[in-house]
Image 1 (cartoon, helix red, strand yellow):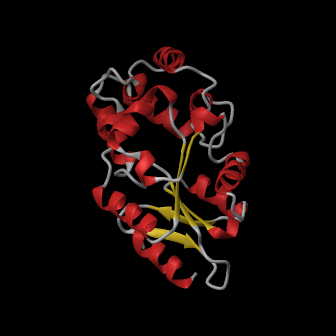
Image 2: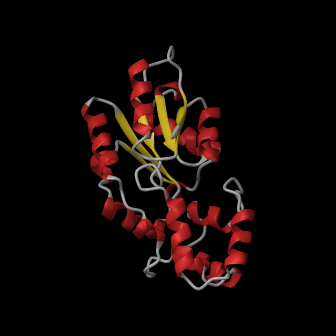
Amino acid sequence: MRAEVNSRSDGPKVEAVVFDWGGVITIPPGPVIEKLYKEVDIDQKKLRTRQAEYRDDDPNSQFAQLERGELSLDAYLTWSQSDLPGAETIWDPSSPHFLFSHLKVVPEVVNRILQLRQRGLVTGLLTNNIAEAWPVVTDGLDVEKLFDVVINSAFVGMRKPEERIYTHLLEELEMEPESVLFLDDNRLNVEAARTRGIQVIKVTEPVAAWTKIEQILGKA
């Protein structure tokens, strides 16, 4: 099975579908990150150690501060280079190995989102992102055309999986959590949304997830 789902067939009608960006609208980032790091000059053993130590739910990490807009990208790159030379490369927009430039949007997913809007559903984007890198995202994705609500962690000072960002999402949508379906490729983000009462799908492969979306919308 390519997507895990939590839905309520006897619950309220789904009125909004909200998407993560990386790995949900774009190709999965994991293999891309692995490929890019193989192409740069970096101590691979130390890199694996850092990756094993990193926790997405650590609110005090340098990366969490970057995604909340509390730390500038320049400051993060300086820290990352001092911590593990080469690790900063995939987060540097001036580098040919900049991750966001390699996360290609999946055209079928974009078309499906447009179809949801045509069917009268509200659509949203909820992304942990980097303020200085946002132009790269919007160059490849017409967010104004696709989404009624756009929430970028770096612009609101909160990030997934913090509970407050899901509360903020519901306030922006002006909806109850049961009426919202949220898709993310990160297990912690999905679990946090589920705890808040939001219906969820954990995405492994972007196109395959749409079977689950339609199942939920069909039951609603």
